[in-house]
Length: 499
Length: 122
Picture 1 (cartoon, chains in turn brown, orange):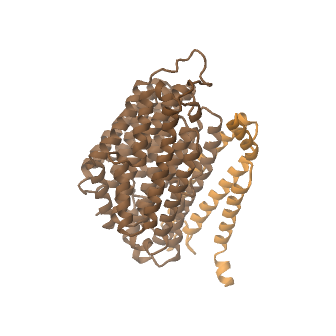
Picture 2 (tube, chains in turn brown, green):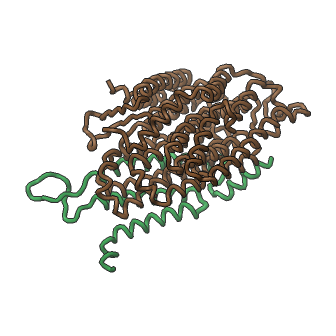
Picture 3 (tube, chains in turn green, yellow):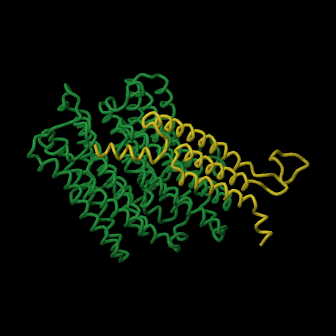
């Protein structure tokens, strides 16, 4: 019965080489859509199954853990799987037109094959209960995302991708080294097994080294301040569809793995005595202030949103650092809400780029009159980014604020408020340029003559507005997102999934 | 103290290799050398795993009547996977360098950076 969990990984694994071999761009798109839809349905079924607190164990090939690899699914990773697959489906729908313009025709099938591999890697990271298996999936998703980023239409994309490759591989290798230390201490690679026998070896100096290596490696992948330097370039230069997908999923999955390691591999009592929580708080607070500050200074919409992602990841790190149940709930909900919000905003940015051939704000003055629907998405998405009541962003910030007040940590409260004010400033910067600077007529330099700049993107607009609607829906009706997050946070604090 | 240093000689050497790799990766402006540094860094981790799996006086892990102590085979198996990952990373890195060389006529980071800044000013 529970064998269907493994389909989440198997479907893209079969489909990706097929896509590459068939070498037809329409088939490639169709297969990606099919994979996205199938995995999304399976992930939703999984979430239905585990939202009550049940835990699914699936042993690959029938080998009993800790010798074999097992997949362990609880409310937390089911929610992550839903986020990943939902955005895979939406980005494929969104990307149909824009990818054909941004990526060369001869590479389209390879583009979609690499896309399916990223999906495979991210889902594998989310589902597996074996820490070395997690490293392998991490590398699968990273390597394919370097390739995707390099397919951006500007030559800067190559440099961005190379820098991401160096930083990402460094992070993954640190993670691998951490696993090595942990294995040397515990003699096992199964996460539950490592955790259950932790008292036998927690006095060894190796263990703290392992924790630090794993933490730094994952922080690099999650782009936590100050290890975020690869993110703005990569998100700015990647093709629009890739930016939508990576911005809403890949860093979230890295944050998920961070949570998983901090609660299910290392016991919470172990690391909360160290300086770690305050260090996470510092990194998170500085991240949100720095990210917001840099976002205000940017001229390109995509770059502005990328820096805002650095800031929003700071919120998630703070939620972990606060080290209480409300904080963790806030982090998990924010993973979900921020994915929706950033997805909608990057889709809108992608549509602007598709039609105007630029994302530079000073060239887009007054675009609100030419493309009212797209700019409307910027307004609602922006409100959710700020955290205005009635939008999804409000829910997670509210919980984060409550968690900070529970700990009487007013420094965090203050930086949350300052970062929110800065968020108003950078969102306003977009809105001002699009709506109120329209004295001069929109003149575009980079549109080839004869091309219709009002070419509509019906499918992409539909996807974008689906997410915009989700921003409002999940701000008003929080049952699905908040319940899953609360179940997840409770089980994390209870000390791991029951065996 | 000397016994401690000599007893862990392999680990000291691994740390050395690792630092050489990391230093090359960070200090060299040449993309090719950066990638080479990354490769050296990854190799150090592979050596580390193999060292961890070594059991003093142990033989290859094949069950026979003559031996009672065996080396741990698992780290070596894990490293086979890590080597594959490393090869894939290198291949992708080289492919990117070739494309960068075609696009910028250079693989020196500072020269590329100058060109990027010029592009952004235009």
